Amino acid sequence: MNRRKFISLSGIAGITYLYPQALTGAGLFQPANEDFIVTVNGAIGINQLGVTLAHEHIITDFAGAEKNLIPIYTDNEAIRKLLPYLLELKKTGVSSIVECTPAYIGRNVILLKALSLASGLHMVTNTGYYAAVGHKYLPKHAFIERAEQIAQRWLSEWQNGIDGTGIRPGFIKLGVDAGPLKEIEKKMIRAAAITHAGSGLKIFIHTGDAAAAREEAAILVKEGIGHEAMIWVHAQNDVSGDTQIELAKKGCWISLDGVNEQASSLDKYTGFITRMKREGLLHRLLISHDDGFSVEKAGNLSVFNPYQNGNTYPYSSLFTKLKSALLQKGITQQEFDNIITKNPAEALKIKICKAAKG
Ligand SMILES: [Zn+2]
Image 1 (cartoon, rainbow, N blue to C red):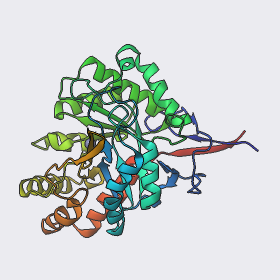
Image 2: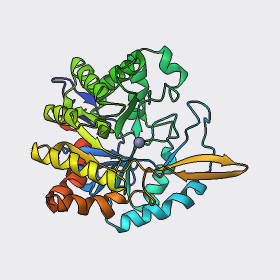
Image 3: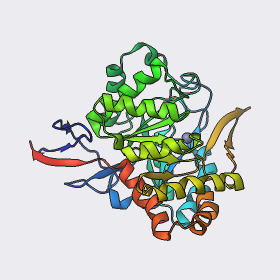
Image 4: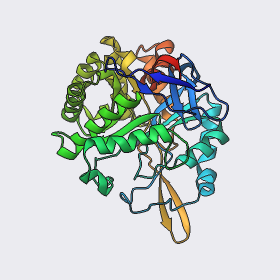
């Protein structure tokens, strides 16, 4: 019997989308009538995500779109470099990483799957394009095609898997510079709206400033997409924090994802987060480091350089530094646990609304 499932489209009433066949893999959770999250190993239940770093990178290649069409390193080289960090993370209680490297900046889903299986960490990858940094990371077709055509490419990754791997995206990742948004950035947001409507995938947007974030939210609403589908990536760029509060009240997710070990950073983040608490908005908050490695070639050797965005050791300051600073300022252990466990699961959650036999 051919069972088919349909998922709901958050923000768009009355439309259903055909649930992809064979979404599960590696013997993991088979969604029945439950909401789910899509990892590189297939779908899992939202309670399986556990402690999650909501915005990190494994390997990025900053050469520019279509410069290196295949990775300039071998997966074995990357695994040798990265796996020790991931095994350590797993030991400290982290269960999942949301890997935010888009296509054309080094997304390598085969590597993510290998690292996920070797480390025991869930990893979630993405579809979508990154239009920030002066469009350096957009492929040629992004300039030519309409939003509907671009969305079709992203939906194809959702339906069929990425580049023939069978590995599916668990969210949409975009990037835009500071506002006012340029036409091509707006087109990417409209393409994301169409993709969300056809898949339920949430929309993570790397955003230059508060003005850009407001514009993104307005475009999504105009396209019929609810605020809860938008994750404002790098909301810390809103220095006053006022727009964080404004958009969180509307339902947007606020991703404060540049946590590092410097005292000035810890002060800034505790300030933002305690304000979110006073406003009753901690349930809209994501925190992470935006750590990772960029790859370069040095002769025949692949060199993986840590970003070192204020962190001497990647992926850890949230637990070794920020947590105690937050607890001292009145954030409770339960609230901290919710921010790093419940919130990422809610942000990534894809809803099933009904199942039908066909
Ligand atoms: Zn990032």
